[in-house]
Amino acid sequence: MNERIKAARKALGLTMEQFGKRVGLSKSAISLIESGKNGTTEQTVASICREFGVNGMWLRTGEGENVRPEHRIFS
Image (cartoon, rainbow, N blue to C red; front, side, top):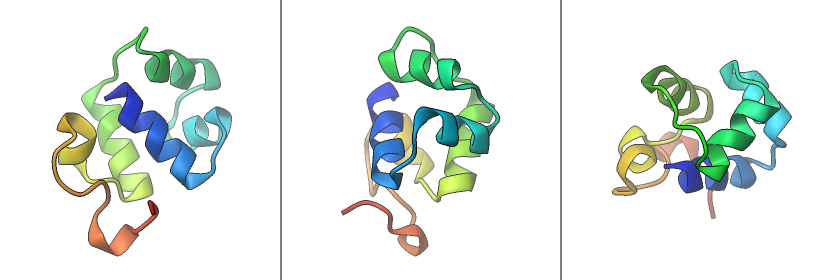
């Protein structure tokens, strides 16, 4: 999941600080999640999905579309 979180952030063109601020996490927390050193909570996953329109199934498992159809952010 850490690689998919990183891919979503990069596709949005956001820094770790900007991305984290929108989901209630610090830059260092995002860095630790993206590097795989820390896991993430269901609450954080839900926040990412809600805030950025990311498909929860894709974020959790890598299966399905990466975003909900109404939130096309990836190319």
